[in-house]
Amino acid sequence: MILPDFEIRHMCREHGMVLPYDEELLNPASLDVRLGDRLMLEEQEHTGMLICSIANATAKDPFLLMPGEFVLAETQEIFNLPDDIGAQFVLKSSRARQGYSHMLAGYCDPGWHGSKLTLELQNARRFHPLPLYPGLKIGQMVFHMLAAKPARTYAVTGRYNSQPHVQSSLG
Image 1 (cartoon, rainbow, N blue to C red):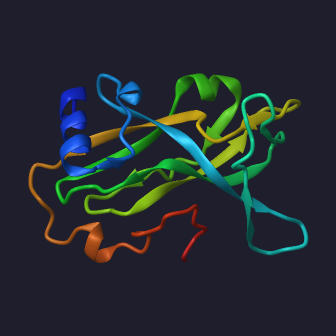
Image 2: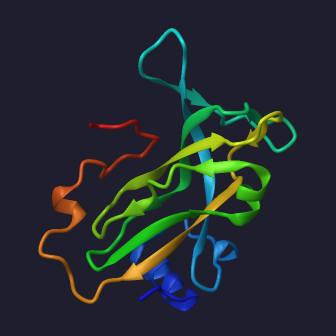
Image 3: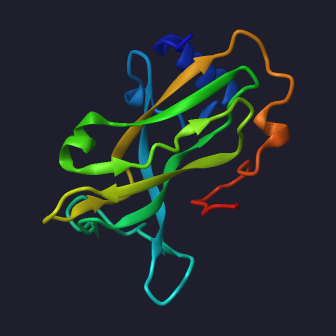
């Protein structure tokens, strides 16, 4: 079952499912999420990804994601999913229409906790850059109630718990 607005509100206010919780981000069956302060960029001289702060970027003076460029980004929000609630990140349609693309790795298992969501973003446009800055509403989380608690939650099995910043692949 997908959680409606009043259940999302209750889980965030009473159980800290999403921190910080902002009522203005609540939709009928989802919660908007915003871009955080850090990106991970690919550089030609390095085989891995390098952390880049965009904390000082603004809507008027953003970091520019160039056509075809790929970055890992983080949400402002920290997630603490209960053992019986999973979540799915979905790019906002307004962002998709502007040319943002997400690599579809946005499922969050029950029990995932203490972490910002790492987003895999790409500029799908051919000629124009796209702005990135903290606070940009980039997507929304849809929360799913399980019929029963799983035998083992992500709190036990997961590698990406307690990740307070953007995180590259752990394998």
